[in-house]
Image 1: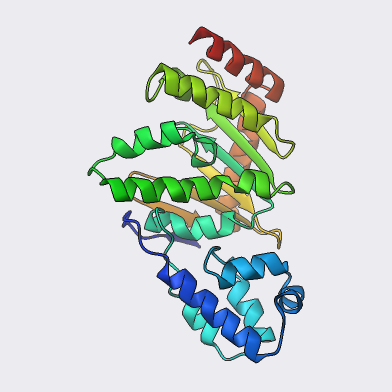
Image 2: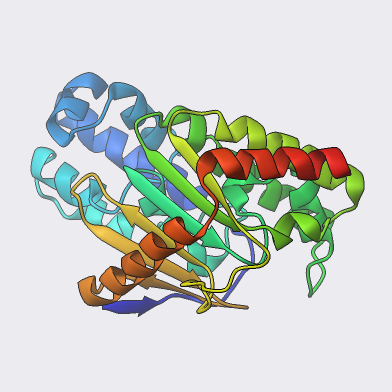
Amino acid sequence: MVDALGTSGEPESSDSLRTFGAVVQALREHAGLSREEFGDRVGLSKHTVASVELGRRMPDPTFAERSEAVLGNTGALQRAAQHLARQPGLAAWFRRWARLEATAITLYTYECRLIPGLLQTEAYARTLFTNQLPPLDDEQIEAQWIARAERQRLLRERPNTAFGFILEEGLFLRRTGGVEVTRELIDHVLEIAELRNVEIQVMPQVQETHAGLHGPMRLLETPENKWFAYCEGQESGQLIADPKVVSVLQMRYARMRSQALTIKDSVSLLQRMRGDL
């Protein structure tokens, strides 16, 4: 299945997250389970359960189904989960991917248009937001940055998740936001590259063969070892679950890893680019 998602990019409130969390808590307490006991039965920590109940965390796509079996199979959670298409600052077409991303054990990203959100600095991100068309107001810009900063916590809070990024050299040469913004951005990317669970490779500006000419892509592996892909356009995105299509994208990404600079050489290039600014 290739799932075409919605097209509205307006930020929405998180009321549905809090409502869903309240339903989970009520059913859990009615069943006489502590957060720790409930978490053990659905494969989550008590801290994750608390985050879901308090509306701070988007539950993964299988949470409602697993929870129903523990909380009496009332169907209430699965019905409530259908209204969880709300997360402040995230475009409508991106939200389902973000839910998968939050629990992924492997996440690969290739970008040729802009620095991926997980690696952006606040100054870089706000440059993108303030130049967006149609224009965003201050409240929308703030909501988008808060959502992006929240996503970035994945890099440090999920040390057992393997993150891989292939970035075009031209993304840094463009100097989006100016020299100071670019200097800070490169410093930030170099800092992230030091994390044990993160691999960053740069695709050289001059490259005779390139497997990524079809455009940017993201790939992820779920805790159940299922792979999904995501491809984004101007005002839409596709969540791809068809194994045959995902396999093609995995093949292209694997080829790009061999075509890009090594991790060590990528760091060296970024350091030289930083020195040239």
